[in-house]
Structure formats: structure tokens, C-alpha cells
Amino acid sequence: MFGRMLGLALALLANTLTAAEPLRRYQAREPHMGVDVTITLYAPSEAVATDAVKAAFRRIADLNKVFSDYDPDSESMRLCAATSVGQPMPISEDLFVVLTAARSWSEKTDGAFDVTVGPLVDLWRRSRRTKKLPTPEAVKEAQQRVGYQHVRLLADPPRAALDRETMRLDFGAIAKGYAAQEAVKTLTKMGLPRCLVAIAGDIAAGDAPPDAPGWKIGIAPPNADADPSRYLKLVKACVSTSGDSYQYVEINGVRYSHIVDSRTGLGLTHRCSVTVVSPSGSTSDALDTAATILGAERGAKLIEDTEGAAGLLIFGEERSETTTSRFKEWLWE
Image (cartoon, rainbow, N blue to C red; front, side, top):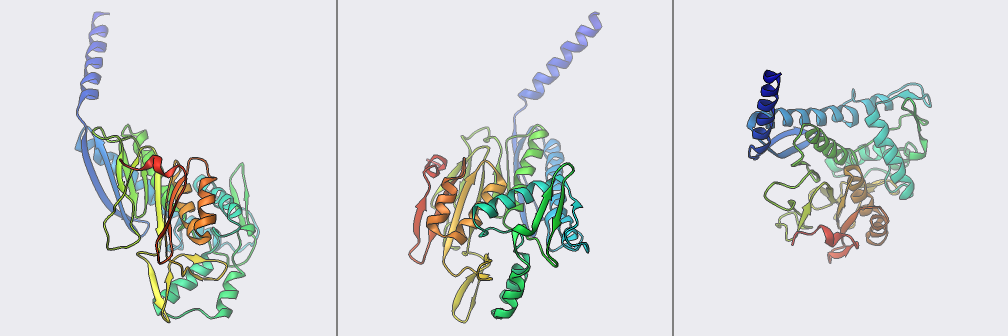
């Protein structure tokens, strides 16, 4: 009995020492989903941090195998390539969750956000490379293969069917936010909740650093060459920014964004930058893109009406700003 009690006492002492071990800041970067992914976390040792970072990067890599539209072997591209049009196919829980969220955002935005926009995105990518606008006939043909209403989802077990031929899914406006939050969940489950995952303009934060009230995140300015002038204080939240500051092309004297409006089949021509904070990564990612397409007034209302979301919208050459009521709660002061 004494030996067992002594062993228990020593175990409790070891746990106490481990819990008291100071946390140190670690950071790692790897390319995933076509961009650089940065993970910052606080851990008691480099070995613990390394194992956790590997697991988080592995989770992101696995999600890329689900959502990538560049990889013909990704799960979403295999769904698009299915020869049996309208025949439900088994899909993973991740694909089902994100497709369900995407359909909800499509309905809320009257199709301004549409995960089936892939044919138009492919067409616009070629235009950006060649700096030539697609013909009206090419746009019309691509638009005939777009429409969130033609994606059917069935649960228990999760399945999906595409009811039109040669449809193409594009998760560029929702998957990175989802992946960033999933990486934070992975780190948290491993006992390291003080973490931050940045997948380009989509960022997910866990608990605050041990020496700060939150993660200090600079709000991307409309001018790509400028430094942030305002900062967010993120704790257990996600932020996404979308706009035309970094990715655009000029064709025939007109500046076009990389963001495609399915109604025109072309990149947006109005200047814009939208930053959205939300408890959900897929929500912030989808909302910032939807708002850039909808414009300042409708975009702000959409964000305002979304539970827990807040936004900063900057539109026009004059850089007119609109903020939703909850946005100031997230500002670093």
C-alpha cells in the first residue's frame, strides 16, 4: 500500500512540475493549399511543439486532398468527374460539412456566394493569364454549368450529387478558413490551445498568448504597399480578408479583381477590401468574399445579421468605410 501511495505522490509531483513548466513561443511555416501557412503556438518544449505542428500541418494537408480544385485526385474533383450525373456519391464528413455551409451561404446571398462557380473561375484564370476577356459565348456556356441549386446533399451517411454535367466545385472562398480553424482544433486537442494558424488571409486563433490579452493581428490595408494602421485582438475567433489589393489584372484599361461575380462571369471591377471576424473560420471566409460581391450596403447587412460576426468594409476609389456594430469590440486598444 505504501509503495502505491508513494508512486501516486511522485506521479502527482511530476504532473505539477510539468504544468508549471514555462511556455515558450514556437513558429513554423510550410506551403499548403497553394499558399504559405504559418503556425504560431506556445508549448513547454520544442519536442512537444514539433509534434503538434506536424499534426496540424497534416490536418491541413488532408483537407487540401478534399477541397483542392488543382488536384484531379482530390475528393471534390472526383465528385465533379463522376460519370453518373445526379447519382449520390459517398463523401467525407469534412466535404459534407463545408458543402452544407456553402449551400446556406448561397441561399442567404441569392447566389452571390456559390461553390459551383468553378467553370467561371477556370475561364477567368485564363483571362488573367492572357489578359484577354472571355467571349460572351464562353461566359454563357460556363454559366450554364453553375448553380448551387444543382448540388444535392443527403445525410446518414453523407452523400452528394451534382445534377448537371461538367459542373466544377471551387472552395477557394471557404476552405482555407475552415482548414485554419480545424488546425487550431488539432492543436487544442493536443493540449496546446494558445495558438494561431494563418493560411494567407484566413486566420484562426485559439486561446490568448500567456503574456497578452489576445493575438494582435494587423488589419490588411486597402493599399498593398502600406502597413496596417489598425489591429484586432483575437481570442478563440477567426478573421478573413478579401479584396483586390493583391490579386488583380488590368485588361483594356480596366482593373479586374480575381474574385469572380457569377452574374457577369468576370472579375469584380469595383475597388474593395472586406475584413470579417467570426467564431467560425468557414463563416469569416465565406462572408468576406460574399460581401465584396454584394457591395457595402448589402454586405454589411449580411455580416450584421450573422450571429457573432463583425466586419470592416472598404469600397470605391475614395475608400469609403463601413463597419458593423460589433466590429469595435475586436479592435486592439
